[in-house]
View 1 (spheres, rainbow, N blue to C red):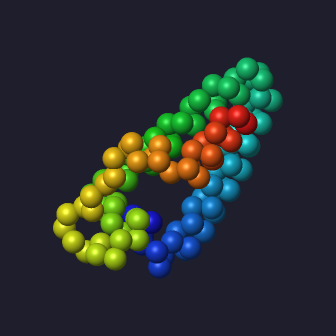
View 2: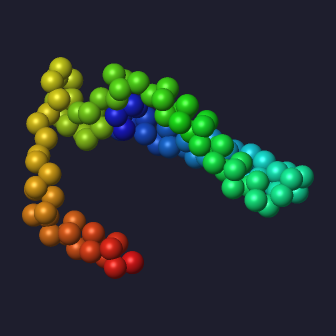
Length: 107
């Protein structure tokens, strides 16, 4: 939401889903070809090499275009300064968050 805002979020999520589906299809095809042509062991190396395009795509997101206030829905997100953040110690005081964390740990 920090990139596009609330109004364009649905369109951005749809676009991301289209690219994710196309990437999954391409990755499955690549791993099938690699497994058939070389060996099943090379599928692991092919999947490790697919990290490179992901890192390149993430590196293209500039920190200056991500707006913190817009991402959290702050009403005064047009101000030049970032809103104050809570300390991390306040996370321990949120009972529902701790319950969720305990469930994840037990899972």
